[in-house]
Image (cartoon, rainbow, N blue to C red; front, top):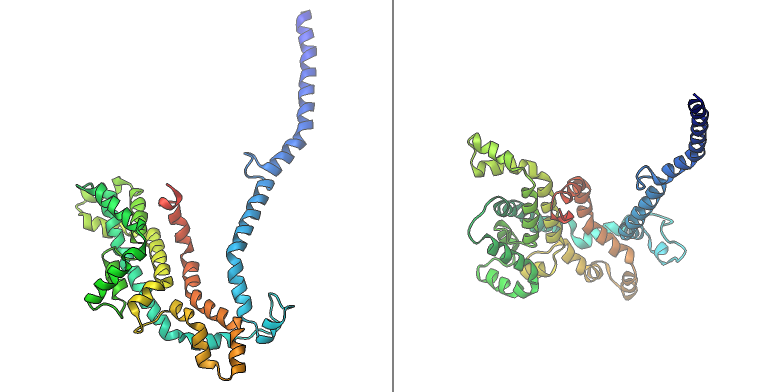
Length: 332
């Protein structure tokens, strides 16, 4: 009986001590959870450094665009005034009017789209077919063909540029968009190897049971590809089209080599912007000297050239983020 009473006396004191200690640690626990989070990576401190890093990286990417936009709206007086940094005293669109005329924007834009959009569409379809073959079929020589495809990606484009030019010249394709369209139709256009790899990794992530169910219902391989695989591969197709379009858009060396004087693209016009502007607007020697220092008009022309790409990225960014989680870009 005495032992039981002693135990009853000791037990409440231990219980009171535990509650008191817990009450003392509770504010510290709450503060730690608030700053570091439940798992140490979702608290206020972690979020602060995460957002700070993202803002810094975003500023690095956005700074050139912000600078171009700011400078392109400046008048000559604001451009020569060192006290005017970002916001012009008076916004002027005359720079864009002159740049529009120098670039001959409507005509040059149509030519650029012809040399960019059609090859991009052709690459999007042809590379999907090749990527589906590598992802879903086993055939003799598959590793060898895959290795040869990788080698074509490693070899610099300058090595095969002259032979390709002579080939297109013999077939009478130079001076038109055919040197870009024909290789794209056969999955041999610019960076086609990368697009095939993207498709291959994406198609490998599609469950085999989905295709087997379609085969049980009587669908053939071609029907499965066009009616089942392609509809669920829209993110990969959008990203491939986006990359192909941008690379064809920005291509200047091969464009100048294949197109010659018959056609011109916006990047090619931008390279000749200074001479074209002087020949169009430069009159007297004073006017020529004035155009040499007018960076606002040059940056307005640059903005007109990259504006279609910015619009395209704006509408395709959702699919771009989605496909980076499903292809080899993320290492998956």
